[in-house]
Image (cartoon, rainbow, N blue to C red):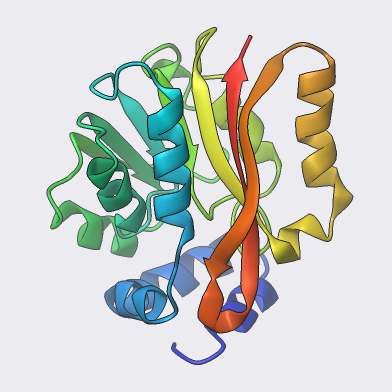
Length: 204
């Protein structure tokens, strides 16, 4: 999967079909994304690193995939990174990178309640939106964070066509449940002509 790979991702529907897509893509995923100039892992990781007081505190890399996001978090200074993903094929590649304290497979609807309060921050880099996890995944991660916890995530341009995603964030902020620490639109996959909005939210 090389040229126009995002089109195939956006056309894929259903959790099981999506899992198969990523399992089959795992061996080639890093090469494809790097060749396309995938910028979002660095953008989210650097934004989180600027917002957090102590990067040695544990962070959850939700939807870690092959570990491109974990590598970017490590490069930004994070030292205690746990990753979770639905794709066993992607996790196998991530394990070889040696940047994670722990890596675990999760189900599509796994609430991960046993992880509540463990993390000072969480990242969902290129994970929530079109061709990936639904908006409900946002709440699965958000509920794990303690007061003061940080959540760095991205919505790509295709996802932003659905107003529900931005509206969800706006509702949290307007209710006083969250504070925006960072918000910036920029590059996502330049070779595909796709940008992304990067957020860092702080939980009240």
